[in-house]
Image 1: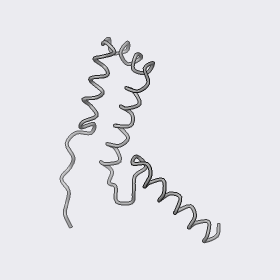
Image 2 (image 1 turned 90 degrees about the horizontal axis):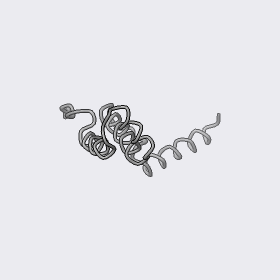
Image 3 (image 1 turned 120 degrees about the horizontal axis):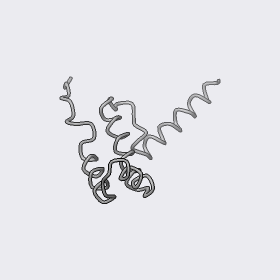
Image 4 (image 1 turned 30 degrees about the horizontal axis):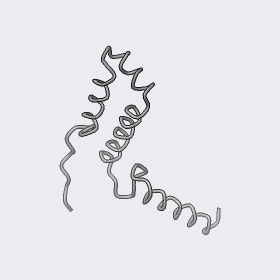
Amino acid sequence: MQASDRFNINSQLEHLQAKYVGTGHADMNRFEWAVNIHRDSYASYVGHYPVLAYFAVAENESIGRERYNFMQKMLLPCGVPPEREDE
């Protein structure tokens, strides 16, 4: 692998990270990454009706109730954020 290939790969990665929020960035901590993953998952569950119907049947709830529950879980998917240490 040449140096120009490495530079090209890094520039492509930076472009993807700037374009899509869920791909993260160098300063992202573990909690922020987990929040993005959980929110993406919940948004996918709500957006795909068959998956939402599957969860509704599995939990013996109505589809509307499951949609509401997933939307509520999107607010704080991983709980309260940890306190940051300001350096």
